[in-house]
Amino acid sequence: MIVVMQQGAAFEEVAAVIRRVEAVGCQVYTSKDRGRTIVGVIGRNVDSLHEVVAELPGVEDVLDIGPAYRLASREYRRASSVVDVRGVAVGGERPVLIAGPCAVESHEQLLASAHAVKAAGADLLRGGAFKPRTSPYSFRGLGAEGLRILHDVGRRTGLPVVSEILSPTDIDLFLEHVDVLQIGARNMQNYNLLDEVGKAARPVLLKRGMMSTIEELLLSAEYILARGNERVILCERGIRTFETSTRHTPDIAAIPVVKQLSHLPIVFDPSHAAGARRYVPPFARAGIAAGADGILVEVHANPDEALCDGRQALAPADYVRLVGEMRAIAAAIGRPFEAAAAANAR
Ligand code: PEP
Ligand code: MN
Image (tube, rainbow, N blue to C red; front, side):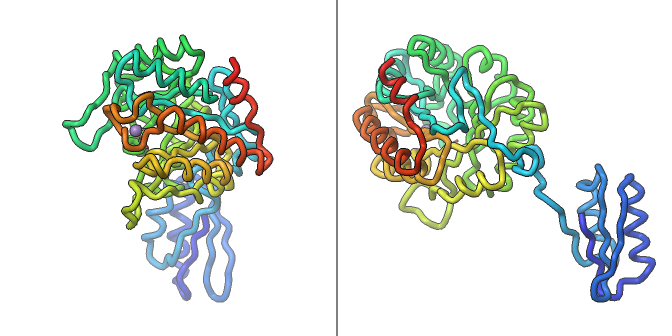
C-alpha cells in the first residue's frame, strides 16, 4: 500500500500515519517526491488499514499495490488452472461443452435432452432443480427430486452433471447428486454460500452477477479459493446495460480480460445473455472466438414445451449445427475440439 500525503502535510500528520500502520505490525518506508511525503507500507495486515488511513489528516490518497483478489490472480499463479470434472478438463487446450435444459422437468424430458446433447458432443450435462425465478409464480424447479433425476440421467449417459445451489443448507444434498456446484448470477455475492462451496471438495461454476464488475467476480472467486477449494470455473453470462434488445448484454470482453487477470478458467453462457433463441448461436460463436474455455448452452428436447427459459433454449438440431460452427471457429484459432467429437462417437 502507498500513502500519498498532501503537499505540505505537517510532520505530525506523517508521524500519525506511521504510528497507525506500525501499530498493526506493518513496516514503513518513507520518501519525498516534489514536496510530498510518500509512505510505503508492507505487511500482512495492510488491507485492514486502507480505509482508516485514507481518513487521517494530511492524507491525499491511498493506493493498493496489486489486485485485492490474490489467490485468483495471475500474479499468484502464472500458469492457467485446469479444473478436473470427473475426467473432463476445464481450462485446458480444448473448450468444453456444457449443455442441457434450464430446469429438470421430468425424467423423460431430461433423458431426451441429455441424449441429444451427448450425441452432439457435450462434455457436461446441466439442469436446474432449484431455480431462482424473478417471479415467485414461475416454475421454481423440482427440488430434491430434480437432483435425483439429474444424477440418474448423468450416470446413465456418462455425463458429469452441473446444477445450481441456492442455499448453504442444501450442500450435503448437492454433494450426493452433482459433480459441479453452480452459483447463479443472483448469488454471486451471497458470501455464506460462497464460504460453504469453498469448503466443499467439488468443482464450482461461479456465474458473474448481472450487475457485477469483473473485479467483483474475481473477489467472489477469492472467497471460494480462500476456503481451500481451488476448483473454480468462472462464467460470463451477460450484464445489465442500457441496451434492451437482448435480455442482457454479452460481455465478450470479460473473456480475454479475465484470462489476463486470473489463472482461473472462464466459460461463456450465450443463452442467458441472449434471452432469445436466435441470438444464441452468434453469441456462442463469439465466445469461442474470444477464447472461452467452454460454452454453456440451454438445450431442450422440446423448447416450446419448456417450463423455464424456453424462449432461449435451442432445439437439438440447432445445437448440433452450433457445435459444428464452434468446431470450425476453434480450428480457425488453433484450438482442438476432438474430445467432444470423440464423445459423439461413444
Ligand atoms: C441458469 O443458469 O439457469 C440461470 C438462472 O442463470 P443466471 O444465474 O446466469 O441467471
Ligand atoms: Mn435458465
